Every structure is written in C-alpha cells, then in structure tokens.
Image 1 (spheres, helix red, strand yellow):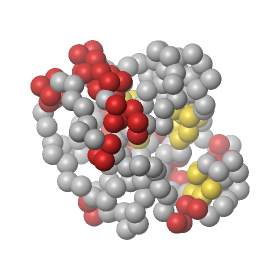
Image 2: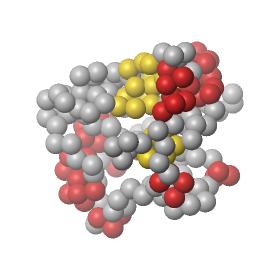
Image 3: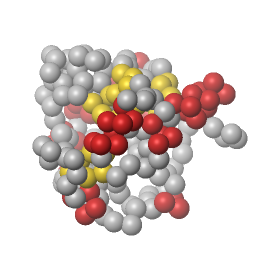
Amino acid sequence: MSGSIFNAEQRYAWDRDGYVLVRKLFDDEEIAILRGAIEGDPALRASLYDRRDASGKATRENGCLQVVKGSHHCGRIEHGVLPGEQVGADPRRVDEILKRLPVEHAEMEPGDGLFFHANVLHRSDQNRSAQRRWTVLHCYNAARNNPYLEHHHPQYTPLQKVDDGAIKRAGIRFAQSRAEFRERSANPPELNKRIG
C-alpha cells in the first residue's frame, strides 16, 4: 500500500487481525509534553470522564483495552443500549464471535499506540486498581464517509498533517476555554434502541 505508515509485517497483521500495536509511537519527551497538557489543562480536565486514578501504566489489572482478534472480518454489527445503559454491540452476535475468535489484552506502556479497524470488537474493564489509565483516542474517518447525524463523532474536519517534531516544537499548550470541548457525548438516535 503506497504511503502507508505500516511496514509490510504490520500491514499483514492489520489485514489479518484488524489491529497493530506500535511500541514507542511517542518518545519520552513527547510523553512528558502530552502528560503535562492532559494533567494541567483545567478546561480539558473539566471535560474528561475523570476516573481519578493514581499513577501507573496500561495492564489487565487496570482495565486495559481488549480486542477480538480478526473480528473486523465479521462485518458491521448492530449497536444499541445494553442492560446497564451502556451502548454496545449486539450481545448475541458477540457471544457467537467469542466462541470462534480470541480476545487479546492490549497491554501498553506510556507512548505506545494501538491502531484498529472500526469493525474490530473491543472493550475495556473497569479500572479497579490503584494505577492510572490514561487513554487518548483519535477516531479517523474518510471524508467520503461523513456522519449524517450529529453525535459524539464530529462532522468531517480536514486534518493538517505535520512532521514528527510538531509536538516538541509546540510544547505544552492549554485550551482557551471549555467551549473548545463538547459538553457531553451524544449518540445518534439509532443507538438509543435497546438490544440484548
């Protein structure tokens, strides 16, 4: 694939498994800048789903992300409101898929990145440990696939590609106000249907 950020082995893993774990995507200096911005920005902190965990890294004990290996080959699965008011995939289909495909725990160190296909089944458990679990999510969508309903994924916004040194040059910057963040996550009406 021309222009891919993945090498041939990673591209094969993406096609086969639906995800690729990239170790040290960010170096120690970049991690310190990102951590400083996340921990120090009052507008960002006020907009987070704050779990108030102590310091630590991403593990099974603190509820790291789990992915179902190869589940992107199963196609799009209907989502809705599950018992307990959480939005998720149709549990009957998920149960059948879990009989056939393995669950992998994506245990990561600070600075690691996990890229995964939109159809990969994934979840995380509640963090019941004393270790902090910071996760920064970036969702990308092709411009031709612009969401047609307002929900927690914003409408298409062009990206400005920057070089690898951009984080270090920018340093720690804070938001100007809370207005830069959505007040709450909102699901499209289709996801308000109860399933399970």
